[in-house]
Amino acid sequence: MADETQYRAVTRGIAVRVEPFYLQERSSPENSQYFWAYRITLENQGQETVQLLNRHWMITNARGEFNEVKGPGVVGEQPVLKPGESFEYTSGVPLDTASGMMGGSYEMESASGERFHIEIPTFSLDLPGRRSLVN
Image 1 (cartoon, one colour):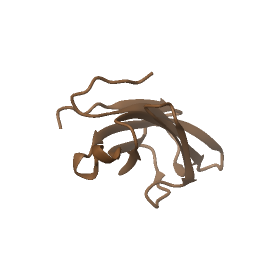
Image 2: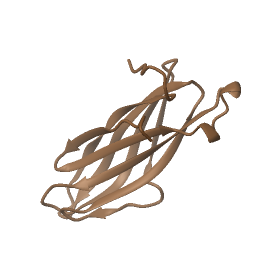
Image 3: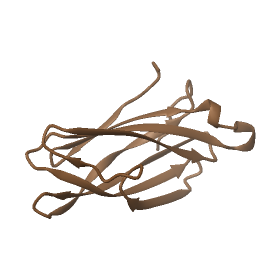
């Protein structure tokens, strides 16, 4: 997939990398249904063991309509990452416009019980071959 773009953020030694990609076979533009998948890699570059507890997504379509998604874990898991370990998962998001963007945060907990949030970088959802429309 040569058209893939990566987005990256690091908070408190936890790196979050996002690679979004459009799924044409799951989309139906004539019905205003567009579907993207995104691959997330979390890497613990810090010195403490952490666990991902919750996710908080902010999703915006091309009309500026906002949708918020909160919940426990990711893809049914609450992974524990020791220093140097990583966790990767793939998920998806439907939109009713041909472009949009999303970002958010993960709530983490350190081995000592401290809870903190790490950034999920805001990333663009655009049809392949179209100019990015992130505002």
